[in-house]
Length: 206
Image 1 (cartoon, one colour):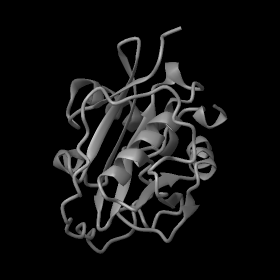
Image 2 (cartoon, helix red, strand yellow):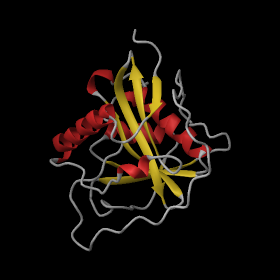
Image 3 (cartoon, rainbow, N blue to C red):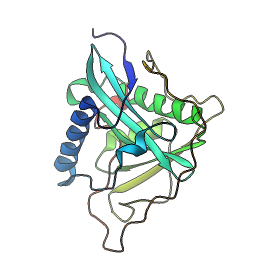
Image 4 (cartoon, one colour):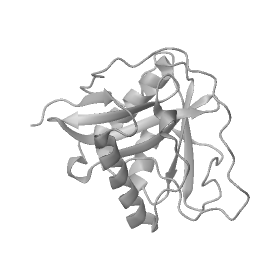
């Protein structure tokens, strides 16, 4: 047993975050034939409007996930669990913490984009109370892209069980700063590979 999951708030370019983000990019290549090309600014994942989390078991970073402002909503990005740690419920726990901290930061809804070739992620989100919404963002025109949203309840808790977790650093609960609308992509044919932001894990079974 590796013990309880510890969740740290870190910068987007933290070494463990960079390693896991590169792993998820390689998953995109395997499943879609290319990397996620949607624009990402690391500064978007800094408090108070954003946040990036790493999940540790036994001192090893095995899971990640972040959120950034998208208009009035919090958008979840880079949800991922490394292959060796799948099937343990880590993705559900990371998702619950992202939702909790989003509510504490003043958000009332979270949104995300995933792909039809990630049935594990689709199952996780549906079972956590997410429903499909109209397409948005860089891959809005992709045939594989799927978009979901969830209204955060009054307590800020996820519908999924949070399990044994905590933030090892204080996460600001200040109201988020007003965010400008994200830039629109140039007019062109929609990219073929969707930006998948759900875990590649089997954690929906947890």
